[in-house]
Length: 456
Image 1 (cartoon, rainbow, N blue to C red):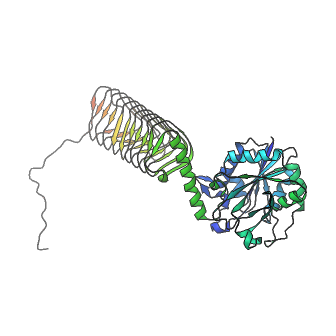
Image 2: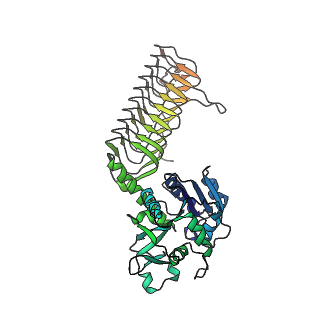
């Protein structure tokens, strides 16, 4: 089946009380509209058309892609009017799938089921049964159970308002049929708008039956109109993602306090503690343990890694059996080998640290290559920046660096070298030797500490 997609994204969303167009508000770190685009791409459509209006170029600039045709609705005169703007771009030999840009949790399985209804019917739509249908159009059925009309709430009578089955606004329609019935839609209603749902009555009057698909989970068709609904769907999305990960072998301390804002590849027996945020492209190997209050973005973490509480890790690669934290920061372009230890209040920036090396306390390592079996003492810093340029430090295998050491780049510490505590290294240190720089210690035998006069 060839599919054309229209996404309606022209609304202002006044109840959001924001200068940002409603479809650009974020859920799970991505604009609402991005979620819809991602879902419809899984259907491999022939074309994607997005109708935009409020916010103008803000919308198209936020969702840049070669496979999208942008159509502007200069006046917001209703959903029927919005689709009318896209009509000239549609190809006749397709089924048109029409979605709204503020319904981010729609399932592709439901969309495929909807598309299949147009094989024998010119029009199909998704409905849902809601306990509280306030604000939504009601599905009116006749004595045989077939749809006879859709009534918007503003135009509904008291009996119709009691109906729980609602129109989701998601429609599949044979494109030739859409081009036939849409020009007949009028704005004879309380809102003086052109309702897309009026194509249902035109289809019925033409002697055709409307096919329906009932959403298995109402959460997938709930639209966002205000910040409360956005917050509600954010948590619903995260719970759904946590459920999916638990089915793959992940344990959570509390699924309600987990956020995934991207994609994840995950192994078995992973444990994730409370208030963990995973963003971008994440890979977690088997038996990874992530402590509470950690933020991890665009990072590959191999099997058996332990990340203790309150760590920030971005754009890094961490090999197996390594330990990080607590309170550690791994910045972009850092790579940690096997069994590396990065301890509390340690910051690593754009550095490679080879197997079994340890930086356990209160250190800064930037633009550095560290070999195997290196021990970096507490308070060590690499002075990699002179105010204009950044330089590299090289620490070869089996080096021991004492506490409170400054390595002023560019500098190389030879294999097996020992650097005494409190040393400032300004030149290369030779391998297998002790290098240190200290002022001789003195004791002033006649010195006495001042004593405060208690009478003052």
